[in-house]
Length: 320
Image (tube, rainbow, N blue to C red; front, side, top):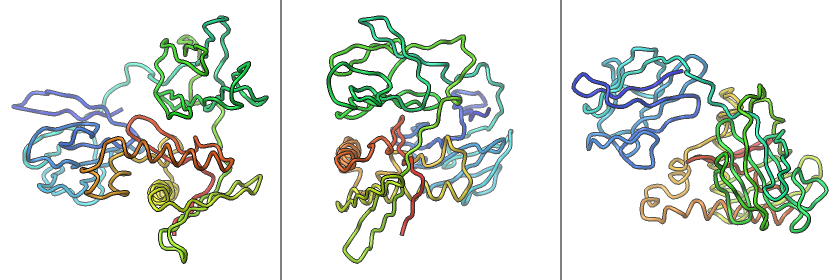
């Protein structure tokens, strides 16, 4: 494990853990690590780990970054003991840390508070509904009313209204019935052992097709096809698919493959104009795209969400 330590006047004033999921560093409040110095750009630096290697990338900051005294250009690897200076103002030290505990989620259960029945979560996706294929059966209501989405350290609930992060021990409602997410902290089985969620979909996206921007979603088994035509929805799929394809080419690990920070998605969609838009615009766009593909017979939760990140979960993505 690694962390960045912020130094001021020779003392450590803050520590920031880093891992395989990229951490965005800059002055804007939407970053994972916010640095208030005016010499630091709104989006200044990205850092992530790949196995035992730490990578840094300056994302076009105005005042630049130095790594061990040399100007940081492009992506560069660093080892424990490296010193970064952002905008000649903020000093960061890279250190290795011993993990104090395994913070991956333990085995999970969904408890029906009315009956006390507990249902084990055995896959990265668990569906609530009245349909015969539901993992958690409802006596009435939609065939698929909600989807429980398990990441390595987070659990989300997706419904027609959107998604929200669940907290272990906190009640949540599905079609008027109250449930609680429980954890067996003594169990040996961890989240990584859950059955992997698979979406047998292919996506081909083009921003400059003969008839304009389009994104074609194909179900490998049923051969169902849906074409997205809305320019902004196609652009969203293009940004997500491009990230997924790049990560596949790089051989990125499954748990980080395809994830892209919300700020980078917004930049790809609206450029600098994103600062003039409502912060909720991206959430609304994702919600409407999900509703469109669901109406066409596809599971909308292949467009995944976790804290400040989005990704596509697909069998294949082609970007033209």
